[in-house]
Image 1 (cartoon, rainbow, N blue to C red):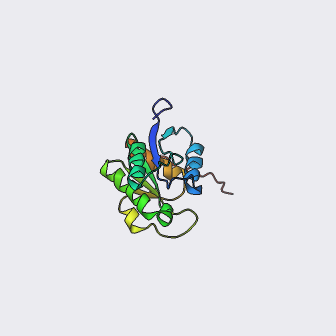
Image 2 (image 1 turned 90 degrees about the vertical axis):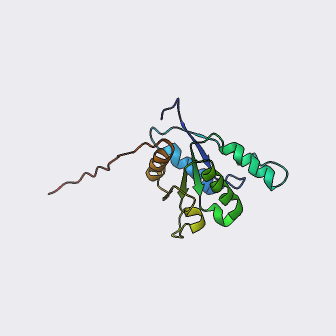
Image 3 (image 1 turned 120 degrees about the vertical axis):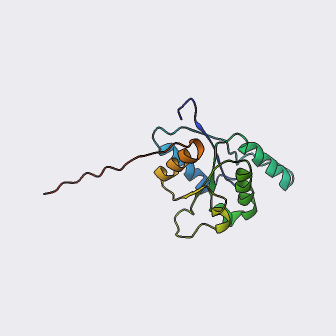
Length: 150
């Protein structure tokens, strides 16, 4: 992964840039040496019926390497988020599912079953999961803790 070859991502949405949707990009932007291209376009809601909306989602997801699922959308639009994750699975796109932000609420089993990996809202955990799932890169980062003994 480099600036010339960014990871192609799709973030699930319900045709709006909700708080969790925007928060994903805050986390990704704060990661050092992580390059990605966002293929999700929540502002491009098509007119017409449910099938037109699904076709637009299929188009947005067609070229991605990984899908970031927002479990918080399950409460907003259960059918839409389930469709997005089912399509990702059918297209053999790995799914990194984010737990609900700011709560201890468990991830709905219907979503967890469609995910390749479930992660907390943590910049490092999210980026590492994306690298593992999209490019099969193993990140062996270690934390260094410095302390003094008197």
